[in-house]
Figure 1 (cartoon, rainbow, N blue to C red):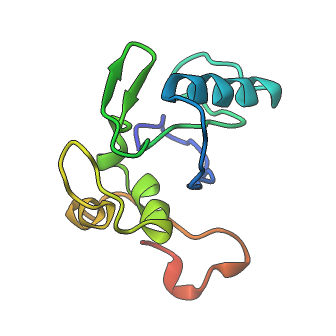
Figure 2 (cartoon, rainbow, N blue to C red):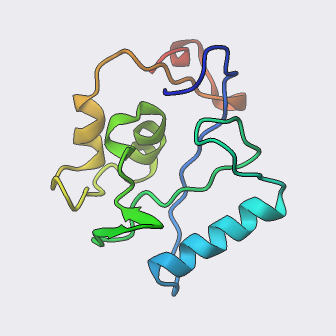
Length: 127
């Protein structure tokens, strides 16, 4: 979604973490990890080695020049919501009040998502 034509498939994963860091401190830690593995930030849609985003931070709503919470495009991306629903279907978007499962159900079928790796089955070709 939003990638230049010919962009290869990429892996997208979601993890739930517990931290004592504040949102901007967590962002700094994530950016440091990206840099350690060789990420160079050029254009937003460029292919990258690693892209760490903070989707939700509890019930925090933040509009800061460096970080917006919840992630501003999370609601429109099947490749984000599909794995998020797998680990936390009842998590709520603090802006809309909808669960992530409800947000996913509202998306159309235009975006394709496939399961990767050994857990894939024939029925997983398109979610």
